[in-house]
Length: 452
Ligand code: MV4
Image (cartoon, rainbow, N blue to C red):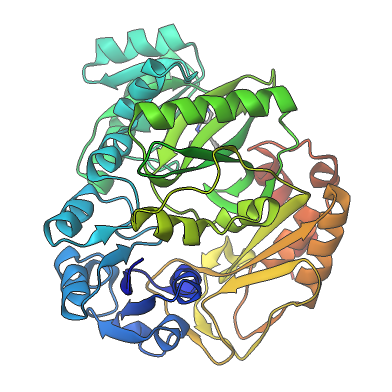
């Protein structure tokens, strides 16, 4: 096992990783921007290194600064968390070149899965069902043919994208050319690569992902699914496991596909395979995430497996204790609490947190990087806490989640808490019959969004 590890992130995920390191008897070195001097993750760590000014492009995203922080403090490994440098193949290579163990997949896997067209190609070759569509398209004639073959409506997606960035829904051929120009320009600006591909739009769809752990000895453990269809502008609000969209046979088919694909692509460490599940129960691969995900605690609560601990153990060369399917029990739900103002179109609303009393009690876990008296800086994402709840059955976990959220006292900044309470109390959520379009449809009718 390592003696000292650099945590190349901030906020709740830096806190989560530092806790796992301490439980393993490993020292944690934090990094921080000048805006995060007084942050919780800095005070929890054994040492901390300032890596630049507030803007992430001048601090948390600067590869040379992060590598220097690890080298000067004598770290043997780097945990990237999620976001920032977590899926940056150049960063993984920089770690390799500095003899730092990157706690994540190998650089070539991160690179291949970062290109969504190559990722789909690898999945197709491994026998995983993918959404019908094209490779990267260049000229207008190719595009028209690809869209016609897939069948309208189609989605244009950025090859270098993911998570819905640069996506365009196209209803018919006459919208195709202008949508392509817009999608390609957006992708070029955001990723420096304007390559776009075509997919048949699956609608209604459920967004279901499978968590996997792979060690360095060819062992693979799948940890079941997370249902992530409650999203707003591609930001997930509520996740749960198990999904109400899967029967046992579909779940096993998905996990078996992920197990085979993980071996085929040489995957290692923790990853997530994202799928769309159609109304007919068919599942289609869309992308692989080569990182720890925000919603990983949902899986931890139903499997009892500490995913971050396993990530560190695998990176240190240890072997998975079991393979195949991780046993599960009960039901878990995660509610993301964002510092956003629902009354102002969910505009980020940073500021001073004058009161912060997270819920406690049976079956409740809160992951947060915030303490009472904290100043939420405006420079980073607006996630301030995750309320993750476990119970034996789905109705019980919903009741427990509503109880926990109701107890949560946050003052000083607006949050998405009341929106989540409305969703948890809706018939759509109670029946489990929601899809990726439910929240946008529901938003207009939520009491928490009524004009004040
Ligand atoms: C799709 C899709 C339907 N058909 N692809 C959005 C995030 C990214 N990871 C992939 N996403 C989707 N891809 C095809 N071919 C539906 C989504 C999707 C979605 C779309 C619109 C509004 C909300 C959504 C939530 C999750 C997934």
